[in-house]
Image 1: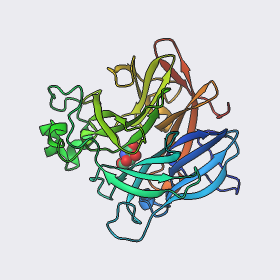
Image 2: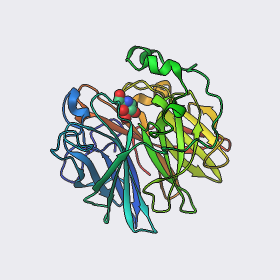
Image 3: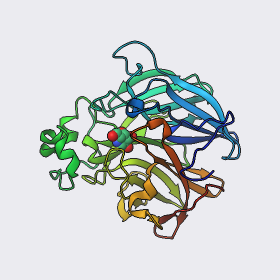
Image 4: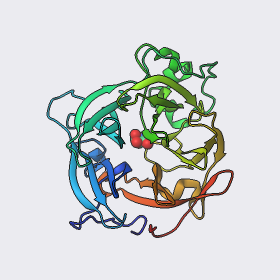
Length: 338
Ligand code: DGJ
């Protein structure tokens, strides 16, 4: 698969699974992602979450829409809503496949976690709820919040600025639950699962522990890299260290990736800078991080090459993660192969 070229499925059609992630289950890789449509409005969900299956990460079988939108206006998964960054994990205890996604509307103001579950990786996934995480719980590392010192220029213009200037968002959202936009899931070696989401208007990531059935938050969560404006976040572990890969917040336009490391899953995380190396590293080779998954001994970083004029034509770039002892690097290569 050539990075940036059309990636064709078993029917010869460009794979349509953006902002996605991979679940490996019983020797099969399942790639779940946003089914995007044509044009600028193709960012909205008119189909749902699509899934492809593969045994070798090269040949992909189209398994269709596994979470379908409905025709009930105002419903969290109605046609024309936003379903972004779907991620699926398998819960050994319940035998269920659990999908989290960013549930929102055209205006992008809902900032909820959508939840859907299935008995089979191929679905169908049943929508359960759209909620904000951790209502009624304070972060474990609650402390003084500094007003937005890293506030990106473009956010000052989009109407959220008055709210953003006041900071203290997690206190404001204490009762109703924390904002959750870009998101990912992580299952540790002991089976504990964590939800990582861009919160507080995207200014700060949260890492939240999940209940044993993976369906809800336990109430234990931390604020991570406050005021650093990270999106497209992925969490993975290697040799007892926990790593974060993320993008900055510039909409669909590429920016420099960031990385961070911690000794335990809930941190404290230390920034490591841009892990990308090679021509185009300063804009993540034109992409935005979506997930990091493991295939045998190889860790693969998935990036979306967004086309914000014709979303269905957004492409992919998958690159191996190279661990360096105190961090990791991602070197550009033309082809994705293991
Ligand atoms: C960047 C996020 O990473 C995407 O998932 C999407 O929400 C866009 N912003 C919308 O502008």
